[in-house]
Image (cartoon, rainbow, N blue to C red; front, side, top):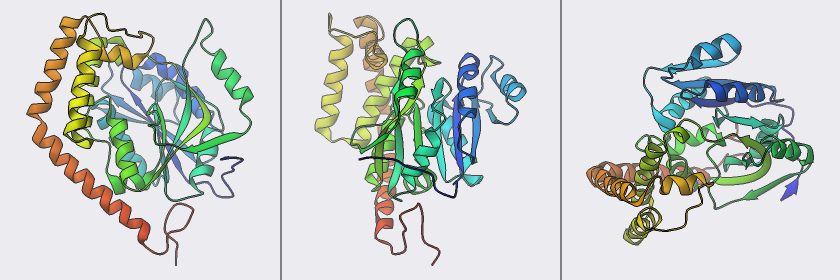
Length: 332
């Protein structure tokens, strides 16, 4: 559908959760853009995962309106975001935005996303159009997209929206559960979105532009990123697929990482994580991923059952009377 949206006369509270780990250089780019958001009822929360680069002091000194949660240990993408989600929900957030520390946004992004989500209580997630740096001027694509963006385009999608910037109805976390901390980093956003769909919610893709600098903390340690991506992709399959799907993922990851001369697009971050080194090292990572998942199989299956029960309970809410189109139950 193509239409114009507005947030209406009321402004539901929105919390933007920015996860950070040794990303002071990214915060210098991301926070000024986030704070320029033109929505009147938003807060920015930085969750710091035990950084050692002075990020916490920098944010507190340069951006006093930003709330900071400093974790004493690195909780990963999943655990760090859950800290922020819990804080935002306790503070009364209607919507929570999970945002990387290295993004720039169109000032209208939250206002438009709220206007979309308020139309239907079944809208659980709104995604954005992600723009990556290209060519000699990394900002040119984003600046042009902002100038050219006049009419919003919104589509229901069966594809995954990017976890780099994800607008989520806060009640979704209550109904389908938090981010699965068994992943730590990588694939947890895919897992969360699958659970949201299983709970009967809609996921929408939009053309609202968000610029992503890319190559954050894990981009600096490609082997660690590759280990987590391959390990977690197999865990994701164990949580959601049958035996055939599990075997397919094993074959897929073996071919992409361990077959000599298999073509790899090194400009694609995901492809690079699936082939982080030479085939000998990659084979070692592949074996580690299999062994790790075998050791954690009982816990993974237990979490799968918990998530399935939550999703079934979430689906039942749509049969209850009194659910309005805006975002919750009617007062009557």
